[in-house]
Length: 407
Image (cartoon, rainbow, N blue to C red; front, top):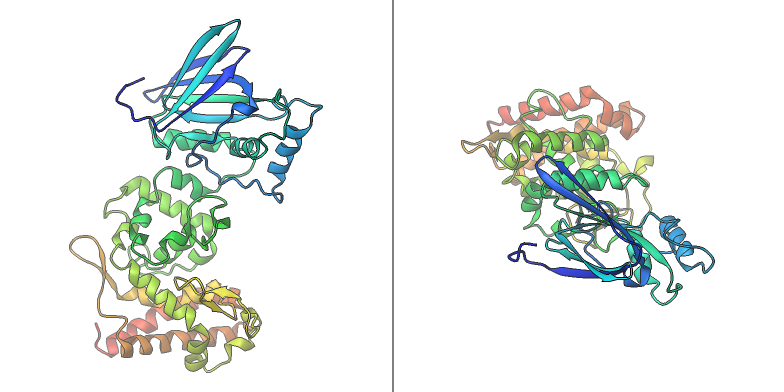
């Protein structure tokens, strides 16, 4: 092992039945596989950042319960019924103690890419039940060293986690693709409430997903939606995920990436979304001359906590629901007022938050939106899928801006 390597954790196992080692060369990387069986009591906690899924070992989790049942049963072996734990590691050291027994030391240097990449539930259940299972219980261990490429990390992690589907946003997070958005969100009041990996939303305070954030960015994409509308963005998770991946693969973190182009207007996207979402009912009633709460889709119940106000405080709730089709349609009207500056970043053609301008634009948008609801029997899904309504919002707000000489 390179002595200059900064080792952050070392774990040690006793092995009585030998170690199987295999070496392969892949994409310039010398990857070594080490497999052995050891005692459960020797298992130690390691970083879970390299694992595509967040582990949930609560009593509600069926996977964890099955592992726990097998581990605690004094009549059956554990390692014959559980695939074990897989680690990505910096290095491994084996010391022969004689009589077929060895000591195995595993070294970790980077918690973000090394640790238990598969079998995280197994590791956590074993640690959770220390002292409750027979000491003779064993677990299968596999250690991989020599993996340098983050994309190889993700590819292997994805392949190993086949028992339950790993979300695409989790794999993108492990690949480092979210660095652009993390940078944009770092100075917001809600950045620490955004989940990037599977099951992260179950943690305290994680009430926004990175996929939802991507949808708002796409709604303001003037490169791909200059003369057409992002009509399907709000309802297609996979579509926006694929689009984001393509941008990253082709442009990385440069300003060629349409998401990076929105760096300086992203706070405005969140501010505008917050305002429209929080005041949706009042805007609809005032400009659309209707009663939004009378619509079945609003699911109104006075005093209830129906929906968290997007990008607001953690205690800001609406007592009604705002369908995504209506919210994204309303937001899309402001895309027309973006331009690209000489540095490749998006900027506003005029101040959309100037009180009079914003009010006039929202009047146009909500008149169209409310009319669309009436024409579609108050069905928000039909409104959100109506291409003519999206086109009408786009053209009418533009006409309003020109007639008012804002452009």
